[in-house]
View 1: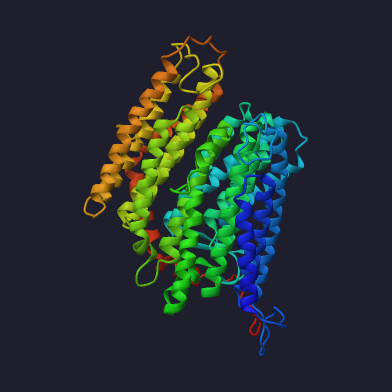
View 2 (view 1 turned 90 degrees about the vertical axis):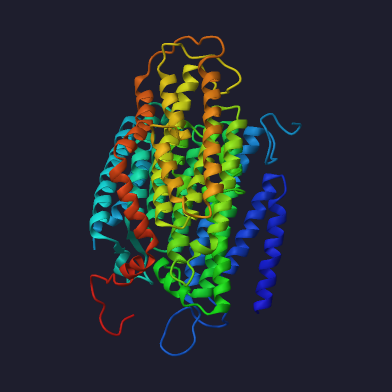
Length: 111
Length: 506
C-alpha cells in the first residue's frame, strides 16, 4: 500500500509541476490543484498508513493516528479557498489583460 | 494565564468581522472602527512588550488544553517585539490609507484587520501547523489588499504573487507532513525536545523537513533565489498596502529565526550552526542582487522594493552569524528597516502626486522648488542607505561589530559597506532625477495629512537613534532569550491547564 500511495503522490506531483510551468493561467490553476491533492495525500500518509482502523484513541487495540486527518481537513479547506481565489483572479486577469498568458501585458495576445 | 495574550488575535478578528458586516455603513464609521482597533492593538502591544520583558516567557493555552495537544500561544520578547512593530507600522499605514486610498474599493478596512490578525497569530503561535494557518490568513488578506483598487498591472502582479505563494504553502505542508512523520508532533517546544532525541535514521528525515521549511520561509522573506516575486508585487501595490507589506517579509525572517533557534535548537548541533554557512552566503548574495536591482531600477517604487530585498539579505546575514550579538544587531536592523522602507513607500506616492503622476526616474516633471518633499526624501535616503546619523548606520555598525571576530568578517564587511556605498549613489541619482530634472510641475493643492503621516513614519528613524541605548539593551536581552531554546521549552512544558482534568480522562 505504501508503494501505491507513493506512486499516486509522485504522479500527481509530476503532473502538477508540469502544468504549473505552463504559460496559461488555467493550466497553472490545474497544476496547483493537482499539487494540493498530492500534498493532502502526503499529509494524510504522514501518520502511518492503517487499514480498517478508526481514527480514535481507545485503550488497547490499534487505531489510526487522528492528528494527520485533522490537519488534512484544515489543509483541504484552505486549499479549496485558495484555488477558488486563484480561479477568480485568473478570470479577472483574462478580463483586464485580454489574454490568459501568465505574463500578459495589457492589450492582449500579440504582445 | 494572562488573558491579554489572546487579545492581539481576538481584537482584529472581531474588528474585521464587524467591518465585514458593516460594509454598507458610511466610510467614516468604518474608518473610526478600524482606527480604534489599530490604536487598541498598539496599546495591547505595548502592554505585552512590558509584560514580556518583566515576566519572562508566558504561555496561553487555548481552550485550556495542555500544551502538546492543544493550541498554545507563546509570548516571549521576540514575539512581543514583532507585535509592537506590526501595530506601529499598521497604525501609520492605516492613517495614510484613510486620507483617500481606502476609497478605491470595498472591504479595505476589513481586509486590513484580517491581515493584522494573520500577522499577530503568526508571531504568537506556539505550533507549526497554526503558523501555517496564520500564514494563509495573512496571505489571503494580502491578496485582497494587493488587488485593492484594481488595475491591469496590479492584477498581473497578483497572479504571480498568488501562484507563487500557493506553491510555497504546499511546500510548507509537505515540510510539516515530513516533520510529523519523523517526530509525531507539531508543537514547536515539543518538537525541539523530540528532534534532539531522534535516532540517526529519523534525524535525516527531520533535516529534510528543516530544509523544506527553510526554503518556504526563505520564499516568504524573499531570500535569493526566491526573491523574484517581490519587486513587481510591492511596486504594484498601493502606497499604504506596500507600507504594510514591509512587515510581511519579516514574517519569513521571524519564522527562520524560530525554526533555526527553537525547533531545531536543542540537539548537539543546533540548526543555526549547520545552516549558518549557507545562510551567510544566501544573505550576502541577496544583498548583492538587491543592490544591483536598486541600481537598475527606473522607477522609484521598484527601487524601494529592491531596498527591501537588500534589508532581507542584511537580516539573514546577521542571523547567520549565530551569535547573540549578530541576532541582536539583526533585530535592531529589523526595526529600522521595516519602519523606514514603509515610510519610503508612503513618500513615493507623495512624490508621484507632487510630480503630477509618475515616479519614473527617467521622465516626468519636478516638484515646485518650495516643496519640502526633497528634504524628507533626503532623510529617508540616508536612513535606508546607512549614512550617519540615522538608524541605518547604527544597525549596520552593530552588525559589523558582531562579525568582527568571526570568519565571516571579510565577506560581510565588504558586502555591507560596498552595498551601502552603491545604494547611496543610487539614491543620490534618484533624488537628482526626481527633484532637479524636467519642467516644473504646477503646485498641487496642499494636502498636509498624508504627507505628515509619511514624514512621521520616516521620523521613527531619528527616534530609533535617540532611544538607541535602551533599544539595543532590549534587543540584546531578546537575542539571548531567543537563542536559549531550553527556557522556552520549559515554559511550554510547565504550562498547566487552569482547570485540572479529572483522573482517568485523557
